[in-house]
Structure formats: C-alpha cells, structure tokens
Length: 196
Image 1 (cartoon, helix red, strand yellow):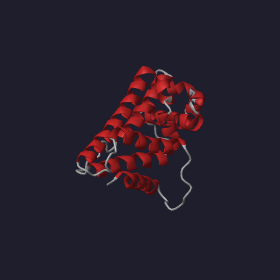
Image 2 (cartoon, one colour):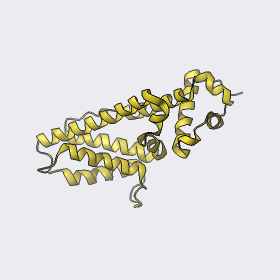
Image 3 (cartoon, rainbow, N blue to C red):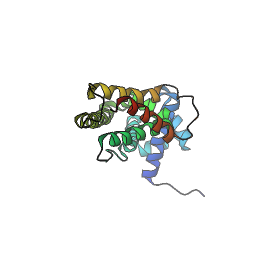
Image 4 (cartoon, one colour):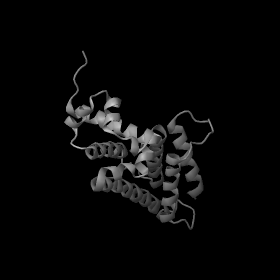
C-alpha cells in the first residue's frame, strides 16, 4: 500500500507538475485535468490542496523563486568571481530545465498568477539585474574591465546571453558533457570579452 503524502508534499508535487505542463505544452494546456493526470490524482483532489488554478500557479512561481534564491547572492571578495558564480548558476539551471525557465522568462507564469505573481517575477528579475550591475560597477571601479565599458550596457549583454540559452537552441558543440561545463564556457567567453 502506498504511503499517504503530507499536504505540503502534495502541494509541492502539484506545483512541480504545473511547472512541467506549462514548460512542455504552454499555459494553454495547463488544466487541472492535466495536473491530476501528471500527479496521479483525481481532478477534484487538486482543489483539496489549492483553492484556485491561480493559487497553483503562485505555488509554481514560489518553486521558481526558491530555485533562483539558492545561493543568492553569491559571496566572493572579487566582483567578477561573484558575478561568475551567479551567471554559471543561472545557466546551469536553464540548461538543466529549459522549458521551465522558458515559461518563467516569457511571463506566462506571471500572467497566469495575476498581480501577485507578476510582482514576484518582477522582484526576481530586478534583484538579478541589480546584482549584476553592482558586480560590474565594482569591477569597473577597481579597474578590472576594459576601458570605456558601461555597466548598464553590460547588464543587457549578460541578460541577453542568459535569455539566448533560454529561448534559443543550445550550442551544438559537444566538448562539454554537463550543464556546468556549458555554463563555465559561456562565462569564460563573456569574461574574455570584458576583462582588462
């Protein structure tokens, strides 16, 4: 006989299933029937754990926030090392779960969750941008970057790199075996372009 799961475990399982469905099929295919099938529950049972579909999406956004918050902000005395830890971590997550992050960055999750979800997603994005810009400003002030580079433009380039991994095909070169190797290569490329 299968062991009964706690409400907290079941809520997490439902939120994970919602993320997976949205990632693989888009928000249009996000239904309680699809979640129930993915989790192995009767459809009506979903609403013992959540009041509305919007609440499920908010829980899914909460999972994303937890993933983004792990080890954030990274600590290191050197601003470029700190930035590298951050970028490699983000890219590893993106490469390991591309569909989930595609849904997150496309704002599908935020719109489905309403104002509260939009606010959480915006907060995550703003915190990330502020962290990147802070590291770059510090690196510029300490003379670590090429002369004439502006942090506000470099932030966009770094964001664009992350978004390219989310929305575009992964590079076809097979010299890396793990997401961490691909993330390291991407960071080394950025570093080569900006470091003095």
